[in-house]
Length: 283
Image 1 (cartoon, one colour):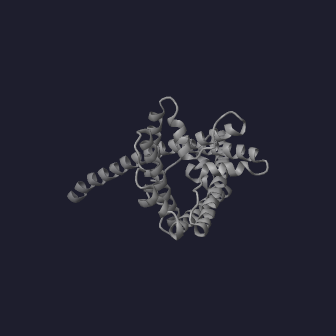
Image 2 (image 1 turned 180 degrees about the horizontal axis):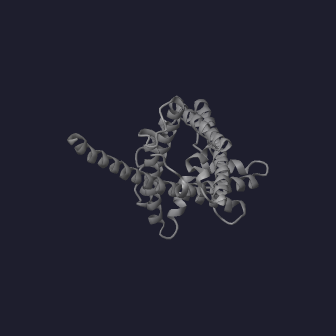
Image 3 (image 1 turned 45 degrees about the vertical axis):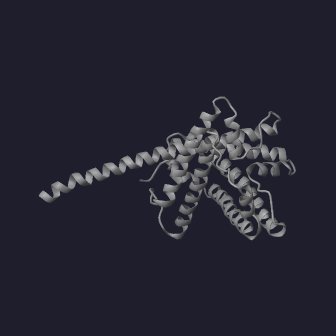
């Protein structure tokens, strides 16, 4: 009996600590989802405005950060956004490395967790760049020639090809998630009492994932083409999201296509807000 009495408080204490840790992780995820949503909504709105001749710009994530910095209180906004993106990075890295939701270790789920970790690294970089930019810190004051030489020849070709293939797989995954409705699983959608909320989350999720898949696939094409051109000519200008928008607009009915994709990215941003508000966590 004495052994049981001494062990029970210890067990309760561990459980309480676990709950505290889970609450902290959820707060980090919530802040991160809001920050990511803000980036996508701003990107989508800026791009859509160009299609109706009301200013704006075809902006990737870095261009969006630059745009926000130029506004009133821009530096403060960008610092807060950068902190939010770092929170999102931490959440993705935790999903990939510590697996707080018990996703699992079978090959399919390990691939999923690896994707989470890679996403975490990318958004960590974006968050640090945002904060450094707002504070006027020059992170790239090194030798430009050494950087450019690193991304030329066979080394550059392999790096760009690897990134291009990875982005291509990510683009395909966005379409699969939309087609299968996998993006609804974390919401426990049937548990939401409001039918209108269910419909809203489904619609913006579908639109957002499809638009994101289109843009990611085009950027993938740019990287793969860059890899081929580097091998042939020795150099190639790197292209990203903003160039993908130009690529879409150059197609037949491109202005309308670009406007649709831009609105889809706004939908994805709203979906991230919905994720912050309604997502359920398995812990």
